[in-house]
Length: 598
Image 1 (cartoon, helix red, strand yellow):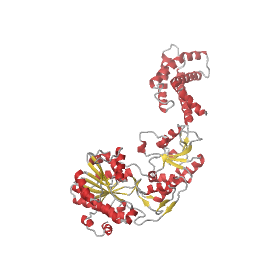
Image 2 (cartoon, helix red, strand yellow):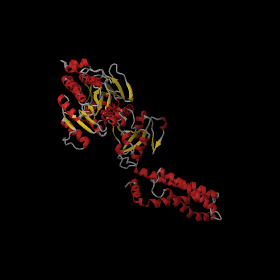
Image 3 (cartoon, rainbow, N blue to C red):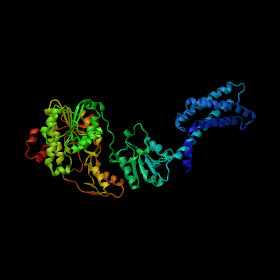
Image 4 (tube, rainbow, N blue to C red):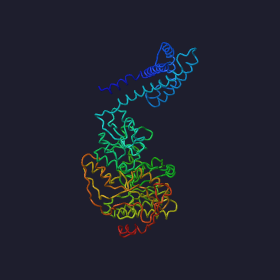
C-alpha cells in the first residue's frame, strides 16, 4: 500500500470523528496562539504569573471557540474541510471569539489574566494556525487524490479560464482519472506565469512544442468550449506534429449548470474542426406559428426531415404529419420521436410527391396549416447521370406539393433548397433553383399564404455528406478521397440548420429565399488531413479531381442577390423571380428547360 492509499483509507475511517477532530485542532491552535501572544508580550519570558493567567483563560477560550464555531457553521459540516467557504467562516469565528475574549479579559475580571495586547496577538495567531491546519489538510488530501502518474496520461490543457480550472479540479482530485494535467497553455498575456493548483501556464499555443518537450505530455485538451475553428485547427495541427492526441470539452450549453468531469472529455469531432456552435433562435416567434397548428413535413425520413420532425414536435403542434415514400425511414423517425414505431397512426403518411392526385387527396383531407418541403433527390453525381429523375422529384414533385398546399389553404410553406441553387452549374443546382422560382410563383399567385424558400449548404452528419464518407473511409483504413486540394464548402450541423429553417418560417416574407449564414467556407483537404491525423495508423489522402457539375468554391448568393438581414443576424433575405407553372409542365426537354429556367 502506498502512502497516498494509506492517507485516503485513514481519512475515510476517521470520517465519523471529523467534527471532534476539528474542535480539538482549533482548541490546540488557540492554546498555542494565546501562549505565544503572552510570550511575545512579556519580552520572550514566560513566568509564573503568565502561566496562571494562561490557564485561567484557556477554558474560556475553548468554550467561546466551540460556541461561536458552531454558531457560524464551522462544526456543523456546512462546508468541506479546508474549502475557501470554510476559511471565510473561520475568519468570522476568529474575529467574534477574539472580540468576546477581549471584552471578558478586560472588563469581567478584577485583574486581567493576560494583557489585552496578548489577546489581539493571540487572535491573529489563532486564525493563522487554524487556517494553516486546514491548508495542510487540504494540500495533503489533494496530493493523495491526484491521479497515479504510472497509469494516467500526462496532459497539456489549453485554456486557463473557467473551463481549464474546472478541468484541473476534476482531474487532480480523482485517483481514477485517466489523465493528469502537467501544464497549461493560454494566449492571454495576463495569464502567463500563472499557476493553478500547482499546474503552471507554460505559454501560448505557439509554445506547445516546448511544453511537450518539457512535460512529456501525450494529450492536448482544448478547454475553451467557444474556441473558433481556426484555433482548434491550429492546435490540432501542432499536436499532430508532436504526436499528441487532441481532446476537447462539449459546448457550453451542454455543460450549463453542472461541473466538468473526466467523462466530459472527448475526441475532436468534425463540428469542433469546423467551429459550428449553438444558434440562438427566437422561441416566441417560432411557437407563435407552430403551437396548436397542423404541420406537415415532406421527406420526413431524411436527415433534415427527421430532425425537423423531432424539433417541431417540441412546439406542441396540434398535429405533426410525416410524409415520405420510404417506409423504413418513417419507422426510424417515429421511433426516434415517440420511443416506439407501430406505424399504425395517422401521423405516418406513406406517399410519393411525384403522385399529384394522392398529394391533393392527402392535403384536402388533412388540411395542414404549415408545410416544410424537405423531400428531394440530392446526390449530385447521380443526378448528373439521371437528370430526368431530378426533374421528376425536385421540379415536378415540388410543383405538386405547392399546388396541393395552395388548394388546402396552407398558411406557411417553406421549401428547403441548397447553396447549389446559387448560380447553378449542376443538375441538382438547376432543379433546386427551379423549385425556388416555382415557390416564388405560388407566392405571387396565392393571396393568403406565405410561400418561401430556405437555402443552405452541406449538413454535417446527413446521409452521403462528405464528412460521413470520411468517417467510413477512415474506419475502413483509408484512403480518404478529396476531389481537389483547394476545394471549399460551407457546413452546418443538422440541428443548427433545422433551427434556422424553423426560424425562417416565422420571419420570411412570401416570395423570398432566405439564405442561412454558413460561416466561413472550409477547405475540405484541411478537414481530411486533421481527421487522418487523429486516426489510428496511417491514412492516405487521394485526390480524385472535380466531378461534372461540381464547383471549386460554392456560393450562397446568386448574381444580383444582396446579403440583407433585417430580422435575424444569421438569415439573409433575397427575392426570387417567379417561374410560370405552364412552362415547366409543357416543356418538351426537361433537362434543357431546367438549365434555361435557372
